[in-house]
Length: 422
Ligand SMILES: CC(C)(COP(=O)(O)OP(=O)(O)OC[C@H]1O[C@@H](n2cnc3c(N)ncnc32)[C@H](O)[C@@H]1OP(=O)(O)O)[C@@H](O)C(=O)NCCC(=O)NCCS
Image 1 (cartoon, rainbow, N blue to C red):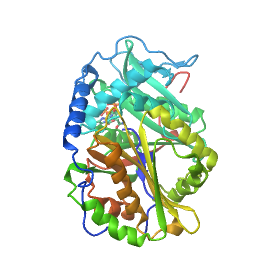
Image 2 (image 1 turned 90 degrees about the vertical axis):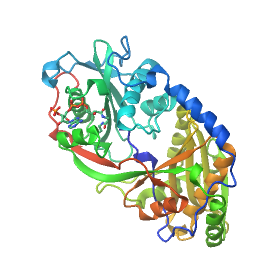
Image 3 (image 1 turned 60 degrees about the vertical axis):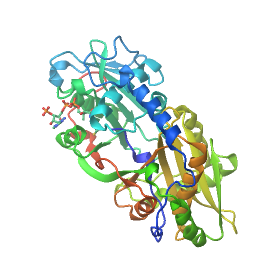
């Protein structure tokens, strides 16, 4: 599955208690008609042939490959009945994006049928630049010119320079024929060629991805849990009831929200807020991200690639003017029923004032006015992040799907494929 790491919330208040009683969206109200229209729009889109159940024979025609770099995984080595090639792809080329997206959608229909799924544009952004713009390689498995699988190898350039993050997908109609293993071996070769010693991946528990990781000898790591808030289940007045006590606890702080790109004045202070994630639970041995204004600027500059509506709320400490906390949510206009919770964080020195809850309540109130077709918000939390989970529980989030377990595999432990790239 596609890594959820950068979407995981964390860095929240140690002593933030789940606030009293919950509420809904009484104040936003009136969502049903637009929500139904949005649903219908989604269904129409998903009736598109690309969203139909897996068939062998998708994606006719050859796909462009990266200039000058080409490798072949001999079929015999991978145990394939047919000849399979592994070719580097230019992720900026729309034909490659389309081919990978088709395989991704076919896999999602089987592995994560409830969604949410990346739409074309967001997927293209993720494939080409990822969340943080780290260097990457994309390779395709092809059979007779059709793409049967792909992998994206991300090469962190700032921290964890010995790691490579791998997302690997095989079309459901082409599984259990060795394609996944051939791609993994190839990826290990590329990781080694880039000086990496550790491959990181992730899969939902109980899916083929988990079995595959286990079969490859990967070690399980952190567990991420997805939760979803169904806005239709929010009782009237719940947000106001949560906001009251949180506001009292957060006396001396003011909230500022925005829609669209990060306001320029926040570029510098945002680095400190992103750094506040450094004490959120993470894998032992993984270095935390270190942010400065330049990195924030680069990160913000990548956002248009995803075509999302981006929203942010910060808490500002009135006395010092310092930014104390942040929450960010994105909504894909091509799939407007789903909101995607990104980071929520409160700086260490400002914890204990229920800012995490207050920020998230304010965000929901903002979204009620800006995204009338929103039905659900999805969030990911490391299973052990009790404080963040308590905030989400208070808001009414419920667990969604099976957890995702991270998998770590030493590059040296993966048998290499033959060929120029291996
Ligand atoms: C995981 C995935 C890439 C496997 O692709 P694949 O081409 O079917 O993999 P392979 O045929 O090379 O399988 C290699 C081994 O993995 C194990 N495996 C793979 N799928 C399995 C399944 N559904 N059940 C049990 N074991 C499985 C087996 O040991 C298999 O060897 P075998 O077929 O000789 O028993 C594919 O199912 C997929 O795209 N899943 C969704 C994305 C994902 O989870 N990616 C991996 C993240 S770590």
